[in-house]
Length: 192
Image 1: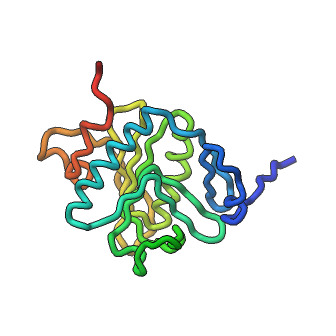
Image 2 (image 1 turned 135 degrees about the vertical axis):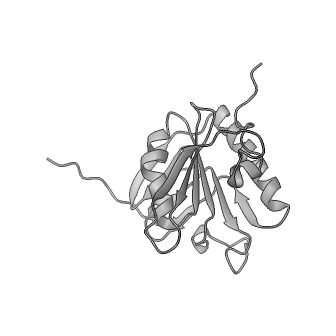
């Protein structure tokens, strides 16, 4: 007998308890991951600080941690960091602004530990690209360097076109936002 997987909506998700567990929806399917640990939070805070410093100085974008991508009726993903252009949403951000009002996403960052690695890699990354997120960074806590996944340029289907491990080699070796923001090299804590 086949297993019937229950389907949920954003409205259903709003009724879930606030118990420290991350509940997300992907096409109505519930994704549940444990609360992040200290190393995860340290890495996220370092990336967030670097991106905020780099992008905030020229008012290019807004950096949220965690961020939320919501699309009615049944999609809600929470990347550890979400970057949107400063003009998004066009009405601005106020007390009543919902995540569903945001439709342009520049960057989603997932810091993957043992509990979230399969979801981040196999489900969430392809979903971000299908939604039109321009770039996804996946930082695996087992490794020292992030994987960068970029979506295909406009006009084609959204899917990963380039995925590589970003290794710093000084200023000339750090290409793109990751290197420019000074993130690489500061992700992991220094040894004692």
